[in-house]
Image 1: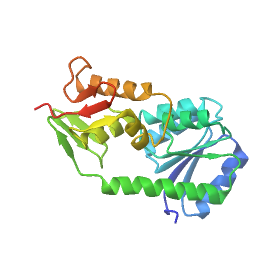
Image 2 (image 1 turned 30 degrees about the horizontal axis):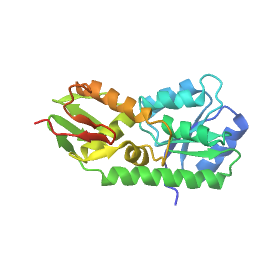
Image 3 (image 1 turned 90 degrees about the vertical axis):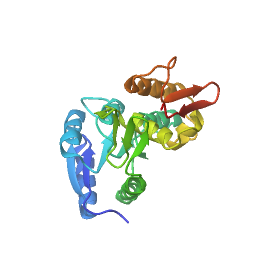
Amino acid sequence: MVYAMALILLVEDDRNIAAALTRALTDAGHVVRPVGQAAQALKIVTQERPDLVILDLGLPDIDGTDALRMMRTVSDVPVIVATARRSEADIIALLSAGADDYVTKPFSGGHILARIAAVLRRARTVTEQAPSAITVGELVIKPRQRRAELRGEPLQLTRREFDVLTYLAERVGQVISRRELMNQVWNQVRIGEEQTIDVHISWLRRKLGETAAKPRFLHTVRGVGVMMVDPR
């Protein structure tokens, strides 16, 4: 089932491909905003808040992977990447950069519609099942609004930082391994770059006002993983 009337941002500079996709998506009941440049896409993501983005990587102004990373700093909108790249390393890099799914070119209208339906279904299920608030000491996380506050002040978190923080906060007192975070937050069985986890934990510590040497919320268990602790 495809969810009707989703606002879809289509980022594709090939006019023929964009026209064909726009017709297929419109026929399926979606509203489509086609653009040909990454800069336009970033503006629309922040101003119009689409339900989903289809992002081509071969854009004329900004590399698609870089555009995806930039998008992730301002929005958690689901993104399906359309790419001709097929290697495992390329796909892992795209998913690590924040893609929710990908399709390899060429693909049919039916294929992309099925992927859209699956991504929208997952996004809606996560929102519906999320608790209204998680409180750990002076830290309050609101998963449904994707907001976090520390001592009443909002935290400026990227999509991935928010997801990591929420996953750990839901499991206070449990040691979570890097592998589990990769599986559950990055949706990757293996990624070969454990530094990705360490970097995000470091960024979170900075925003939580702590350090690895003097942790309050995020405690590293050497050789095992990281644990969220209530500092009270």
